[in-house]
Image (tube, rainbow over all chains, first blue to last red; front, side):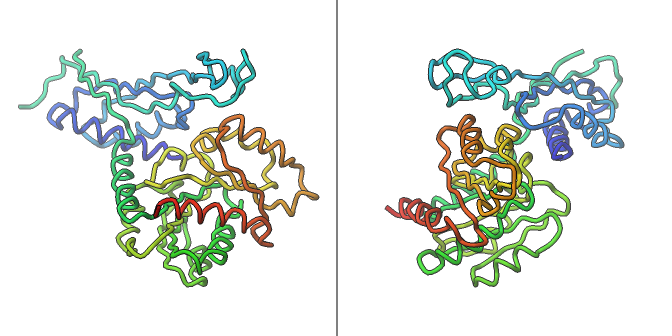
Length: 120
Length: 219
């Protein structure tokens, strides 16, 4: 439900790195989104479209890269996929998983189309 | 095509504001707790019971988050503690910046304990650090014992689990041991209290624990 705010945060960050004079060149905004970050990719995509519409950044779209959720078992120390683990280690039955990836919500980079003429 | 490398956290602005709140709490040796749950689990009743039990021992203030109303703030204000209402106008969670604005209206120097009641939602508030020392998640028995597994993000980030409405156990299909097992599966370090806040059952144990946490800040 908070995807609209997240989308607005993404556009804020893009604005800080790509000046308005280059806004029309923006294509893919690559976002790394962890499987357990609590953000729904489709909703985020939809919200981002709504946020950029009518702005100079309207040509931007999200390229969402999912990051699988993994964690280290507190019992045996093995690295396990969280979905497989169901929060109990399949190897040793241990609890106490330290999540090592899957929480990501990062703007990685932005792709600019160099063929678009920009006003100087 | 050319690429502009960015590599920034989307929620970095919230995290930075949360760090400022946290520094203010630390400066005043104030314990701030962020109370989260689904709607109707009993957060406000927990606050009422906690304030009633601790108000002669601790100086308490409350920040109330609500989507639409100030009904909860009115309930808490009856206990004669400072209350600041944040209405999110539809927003599904509190953010650090909103809490910072609320803090401007409180004198942190005269407080021992700040209770922040988040918007009722087990999903979104998990992602937004407010600067609190701990998240306290309230789960009522009527919600069912599978909820920790369904909302692992919140249970993973919480320090305390309050299993509320244990007086309803004869009427609902929930097993307290199962709630604990599922919650500890995700977070073995969770401190768990069983409670019926409306009848004040189990409130003393939680309050004594909380008071000890406050005392540790002054040590």
